[in-house]
View (tube, rainbow, N blue to C red):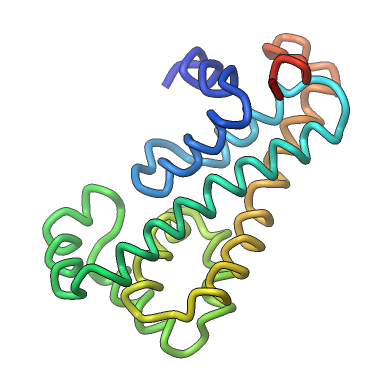
Length: 180
């Protein structure tokens, strides 16, 4: 992926970030950590801007997780299993990982959801298995929001700090243009 792709997403402001992080739950094209660092680098201005960016990416990722949870909750479990068995390996979701997540959810719903959001790859498919396992929605939502915030915020702040420490070669977007 080239830098202009990322710049065009960032150029769409908070709506672009919400939509991109929503879609990333379904199609993990590249590591979200790299994208989040890039977003942090491109936000110029007040440190509060980095927190607003963190909030928008957390919102998008949480909405994507809710959509995946709903899919797991309302589509027949056997249909999902067949789909994962056939296509999961192409999206880094082998059947064994999916089965492990479903079993883990039956024991400890809140901590699995919370800590699973900070594990690369697992964080993309966690919500699907949560829905299939019948995890209670409100605790799932709370744990997802907290976990996503724990994942997104450090990367965005790291990017912001890199830009403030003299990395002048990074493209900068003013807060006024970004939050329109």
